[in-house]
Amino acid sequence: MNFDELPTEKKQTEEPSSEIVETNEAKKKVMEKARKERLTMGKVVFHGLASLAISGIPFVGSIKMGKEIAKNKNIWGKELFTRDKVVRGVIISSNLICYILLGFRLGSEDSEVNKEIYLLMGELTLFAFWLTAAQESIETKRGAQEVIKEKFQLDFPQFIKNMQQFAEKYNVESLKEPLSVCEKIIKEYGHDTIVNLIIRANEMRLDDNK
Amino acid sequence: MTINNISKEYLEKLIAELVKAGEDKIELSMWLDLYDLLSPEEREALISNLEKELKDLQNLN
Image (cartoon, rainbow over all chains, first blue to last red; front, side, top):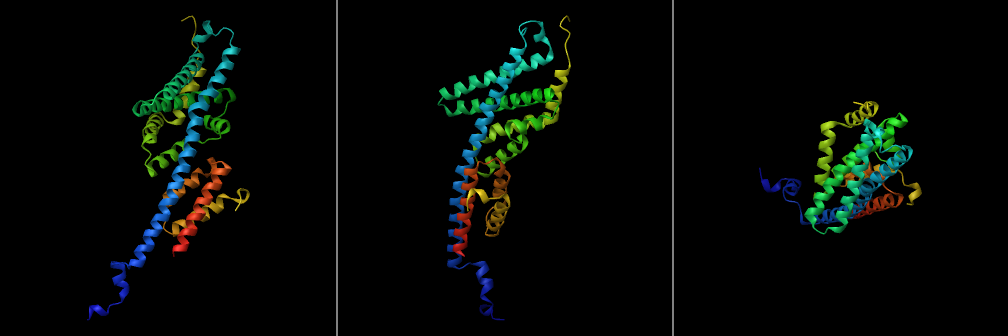
């Protein structure tokens, strides 16, 4: 058998012609350019959503807690020591800390410090987010997820999943760490457990005289 | 195509065409998941980006 007479197709699969190589290179360039544009777009989208989570949610929480304080004339009295008041106090504190951290972030130019601040803000936001949603769901007797979707037009677990995919796909290091913390907290406690704990704490009333 | 007639089905079709042309399925599926969170302007920008990419790839064939 004369190997030189074999169909050229086989030869082509082993060593593609320069025309094919050029086309493939051109395709790669088109794809890379389009991906770069999408990366920029994705950063804007996630920055907007993260800003909403970081500033909007504690803000909503603060308004809600402000209303609660206004309703409770004896906020500095014994009533404060019931469990639900403690939960509310924790929400107010976490919101305040979040704003203080935001102030630090605005004043800091050190990238390492900023990373730490974002990490803390991420944790606090997640915490305040669930406390606020759980508190709201207790009052309206609805699921926390339902309240989150209605109030913030956001499916939180899906949002976290999307952000993770985005951080992995485009290798955005600054997003990876805060997200892994969020994931760890959710994985450790579970959405339902976090909400149920808050509901149970809210339903239990401590005897002020004890 | 204007923003009024951009549907998710159209995006799915566009993504399927791009995957056929060699694009990364996982990356583009992520945008499908994100679609509901995008503003009308962002949706339009995404569709325009994908349409342009598809057109450029088809021109190379």
